[in-house]
Image (cartoon, rainbow, N blue to C red):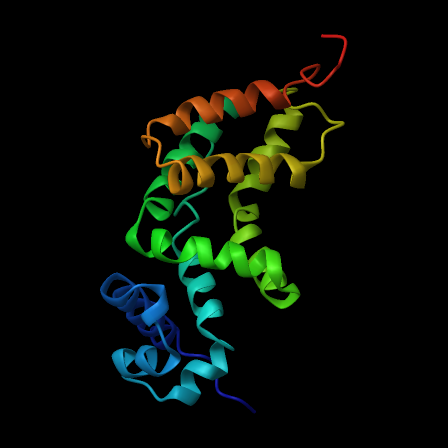
Length: 192
């Protein structure tokens, strides 16, 4: 029977990767350097991650979810709280150093795309699905809308506004408000 994974080793690996990215950038990040900085053998790192991209995906996922579930009592309040909570994870040296390469690989390679969708792309479901379900129950969301499409539109708007266009982080409130207006019942009706 295999031993369970030690969460402290995971933390050391991800911490080492984060430090190395800040020091050397994404291009200087290697599995060997991660293992050395974490104080573990390369096989230990490779048992958990196939390559540096998977380490960086895991690092970004670990920092992207709000610590607690968000429930302000309204869709607008919930979405504003969520986008404010993710600002530090997108507007960080590690994210700026790696996001472009990750997205480029995810667009170009099927394996990288699958890893991106399972980690960075889908990690928000932990807190977004309950928000979506409450919004539907309160009548704040058009039930004809597709959740994944709506979630993706919100995440893309926030990520690209902060990482690519380098807008002031305060822009996320406006993005949240526009998104909430766009998912309300009747908002997508071409007659309105």
